[in-house]
Length: 111
Image (cartoon, rainbow, N blue to C red; front, side, top):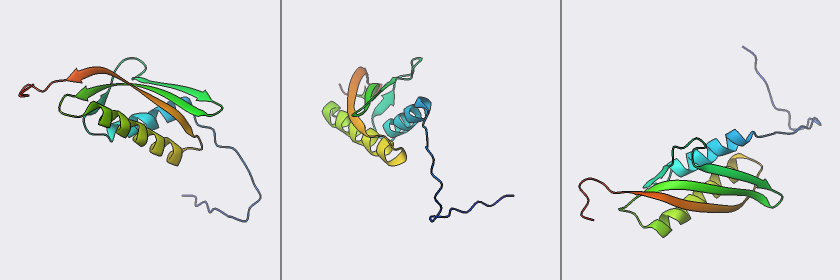
């Protein structure tokens, strides 16, 4: 088994390139961390990303639980995506548009 050591004094430089599928996966992970929200399961998984010069513009389509406050959920989604993408990649998040596509009403809900 090989062991690789990082030498901080090394002058080697390189680029890390993130595939858009990797960033989409990070966005999906960020959404899964918010209680009361489910990402839509269509062919593009409810995540559309546009890489702009100001940063990533994300359009997110989700289903929310009726027992949660929708504006609060949308804000939590935006914060979670911004935090996760910016901490795991070199990209900045310029905007997160949250589209509520469906509401889940539990069977035993009093609504």
